[in-house]
Amino acid sequence: MEFRLNLANLPFDLGHTLDSGQAFRWAQRGEWWYGVLPNGPIKVRQEESSLICVSGDEHLESHSVRLYFRLDDDLERVYSKIMKDPQITEAIQRYYGLRLIQQDVWECLVSFVIATNTNIPRIKLMISNICEKFGEKVTFEGDQYSLFPRPEALAGASREELASCGLGYRARFVKSVAEKVSTGNVSLDELKLLDYERAKEVLTERLLGEKTLLGIGRKAADCILLFSCGKDSAFPIDVWMAKVLAKYYPKLFHKDMAKRLTSHVSKETRLSGAAYESISASMRDYFGEYAGYAQQYLFHDARKSNLA
DNA sequence: AACCAGGTGAGGA
DNA sequence: TCCTCACATGGT
View 1: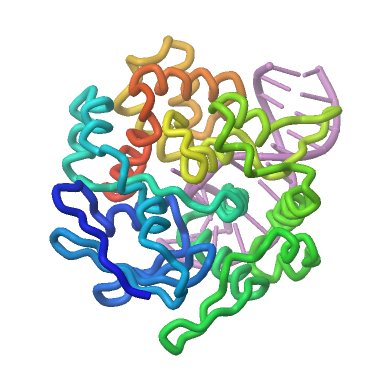
View 2: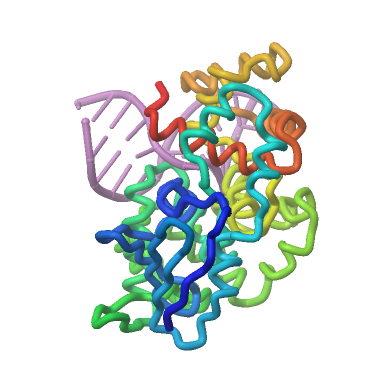
């Protein structure tokens, strides 16, 4: 299956989008980016005004790819809404065409459970390992690829098997969420229908003092909602974003919150739950309905410029 | 050899 | 509710 999507006048930069740390299974080989969508492997390449897509999946429709890369988002409109200051304006200019993408919710959820307290190269390695060990195999252009493992496959894995993928202490969290999802204890389909606050409650809820989804805290929940559930106002705060906020946006916060941020950056203290939510809400107020887009530009810019 | 990485859960004041 | 600590692993 091969088709090309018309990008005429659409701001879109495939490279910036796939290199921005929101999805972990894309790899650049030559002029192509290779990835695996829920239904199979695909390779994509950008020309001046079109996106060329090649997949072994005969049922893959161009519509699915449009949705995945969110090509129907009016990026100029997004820019006009979030361009509030020189910092974000510069990031937009540098990474013009970077888009949020709409990932599969289950894959995104597991990815950001794995993404805690580690770095992006190792996140990619761990995810690649579990796909190879537990994912269904598919052939594309003579090479073997692995689909992302279904919930049942990871629920059925032993903690040792998962740990052997390099997950470390995350193994028990991954097994736990896989069990909750595969038994239907938690429904991921409903998340897109709920508003941001309610969806975040579902992901982070405690029943009788016990967490339903182990390994998903405030930050992971925000990433999942932003990258797979269309909650564009979600504003995840990780160590990079804390640095950005402390350095360029301290005036947006009350003195005590600004201090907590700098103290958090220098590892003296951690952000309390209330502090995280307060700061994140301030950024939602500041950037508006597309605050998550702003976050992604600032995050990518901070990483690429190796912000101190 | 400490320290860091897209943090989180558990336990106690 | 907040603070503190442990946690697997691989790279500097």
